[in-house]
Structures are given as C-alpha cells and as structure tokens.
Length: 220
Image (cartoon, rainbow, N blue to C red):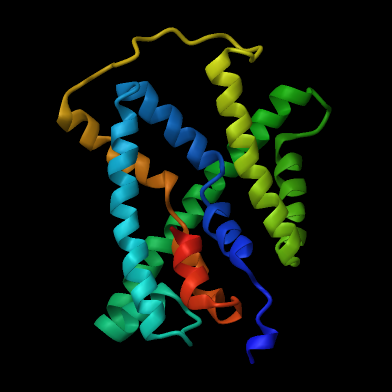
C-alpha cells in the first residue's frame, strides 16, 4: 500500500497554497494595505498565528482519522452530526466559493481585456481560463508547477513593487494610515483570506508519502 503513495511534500505544499495565491489574495493585500498601511503586516501575523492553530488541529484530526477522505466535512459530522455539518459546509464552502469564484473570474477577465486590448469579449477570457484550469486539475505535476509559478509570481511582483520597477502609477499614501490596535485587529478578517485552503490537503492525505510528517509540514 505504501508503494502506491506517490504524492510528496511538494504536492502537499502546492495543494495548500494553490487556493490562496489568487486574485482574492491580491485584493485582500490591497484592501488591507489601503486601509491601515504598513500596520496591516500585524494583522497578517495575527491571522497567520490563528490559522496555524487550525492547521495544528487538522493535523491532529488527520492523525486520529487517517482514512478520512471528506476532510473537514467528516470531522464535523463525527463531532456535531449531519445537520450542523450540512449547514457549515454549504455556508462555509459552497456559497463562499460560488460568490468568490464569480468575483475572481470577473477580475481576471477585466485585467486581461485592459492589458491585451484584443477583440475578445471579457467572458471569453473567463472561459479560456476555466478550460485551462480544468485540464491542469487532471494532472498532479501540472498542479505543482502552477502552484509554484504562482508563488514565484508573487515574489517577483513584491520585488518589482518594493524597488519601484513597475510601469504603473505610483500610489502616494502615508506609510501608516492608522496605528490604532483595534483598527489593525479589524483588518484581521481581511488577512484571513491570505491563509485559507490548508484543509484541502486532508482528502488527499491517503495518497501522500509519509503522511504523518508531510501533511502537517506541508500545511504549515
């Protein structure tokens, strides 16, 4: 059985971060930085620490129930029963994904149409990207490549922004829009979007080599 497990630590990391590095991440960063400025880093640290406790809990649950394939849904089912599980999964995943996916698709289409200036309707970019993503999800190695390219693009964009190498208009604002602790804490909800998706590793944990080590390590 162990010989059939082909997913390594790199695959676990790509699943964990693949959902985060998206337009929701960029929008959250822009919104948080535009609201409080550099102190938003404090909100990100708070959100990161809180999410680390979630990852620790998920790791422990995965160790107790290693054969679970439904992830968070089955943990909730075992703890609270079917009705609370249905409510939490529909509200926390289905509705959230329906709303966020539409927003991300529209942002991508708008950005492409404004950048390329091709005679392609905005919905065309959305359809093309949807097909590409569907194909990519059929192959694990492509998923890994895409995830690491996404992380690399974030690093490159950060360097370009920090050094002022971009061609866009520089936004002028004070470094600190607010230093009030409660203002920083209020933006923690926005910062949470930067760390979502670690639990998506749980359903594939049965196919991960040395899951007891690689699953929690990859999520962290």
